[in-house]
Image (cartoon, rainbow, N blue to C red; front, top):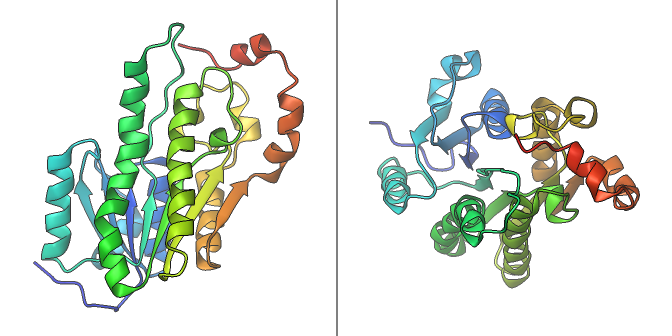
Length: 251
């Protein structure tokens, strides 16, 4: 087993790297020479970037809702002397609301989208405080700011974690620890596939990942994109809910 050389490269920890935005972020970081420790429930697919840069990444299976798997991942990181410079919390699940309100449904999605992100903050924060540096990046969603019909569970979970990040940013502003939030609109992933106009209104994971990494490199903060979504949101709010519901099929 190899041990990472301290300060040899910029090190990233990314959750949810098996597909979509998380996978693209991991690929772009490795391609430019950074080191990535990525986790996901499903294994990452084969890719030339991974094949030609085997010394630039570690992947580990981890279900963020399971404490035992989280602790096993933490112990593994300690065994290879891994402490990230930047933590990108990308894991998230999405499901449309049911016809009836059940709190248990909200609890399931909060388990992943809230607890599955904030437990890593709890773990890395003492290490970052001792080092007096570190950067947490939360991949939220514009749904946290502008909710849509049938998406209250997803929007609520993203808004909850975003508010916690806002509090943390204010609390640790003088410690050298950064808290960045990314609020993307529709991205071409499996999550947006059921939306009828996703192909027209969404951007690719390639473009989204480039934009996010450029923003992080520039110092971070709060990023909302695309801008047109923010500008037209007041107009969208005027559209009857019955019409919007038709664009988001439940099946």
